[in-house]
Image 1 (tube, rainbow, N blue to C red):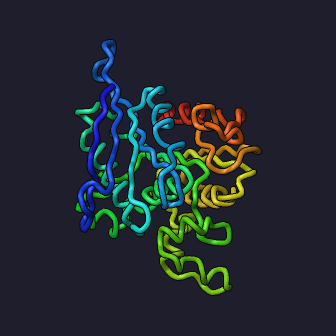
Image 2: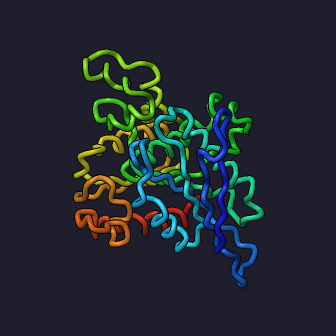
Length: 283
């Protein structure tokens, strides 16, 4: 395996504000030209920080599956929408542009996000073919399109089940104030409520959440699943009864001293995601 680091710069940003960490598997002698899936991981953290629990340990799991792994170090507050999704779009384009050199299957470039990182990953999934995104980056829509999305307990809706803190840091301190007072939502708040932005062009999705999540309610994933179904987008969804928000792998590696983050029944999601990736694109 080799490691490489790439600065991701959008217009108006200082170089190095965002970056992509690449963990590239070596070719194997029995199949030197084998093209592998690639997974770009976006850790959560409420658009305020990036959780270590959802970062390199998750990338290493995808490496163990035979995928190339990438860790997206995206911009958080005080940066505002759409800075982070532009950065992720450029990261997808970078991986696709290097697909031959890195032996990446360009039809299996996935974005994987947790919590607010799930909102980021899903934002690219619904906005990849919108002019405000691809045109501003000087890319063709197909260059920035993720092949599929892997979303763990994602922040999705800015409605009644919103994780308010994420949207305040994404849009500004006044975000969602009107909703609590019964006023109509401003246009930008509705725009980033991703269940309203799903279309038939949204990529296939692997989705999981826990029933017990009290920080980002299960309804976020349910509303996304309903929107995917309504638009004819294939998805796989798993709902676990136990486990609080932020479980990541729900294993020793990511629980640390927080024993409530060790939930054996939830550990199956990463193995289910492996099966989903292996069958991706098959009839």
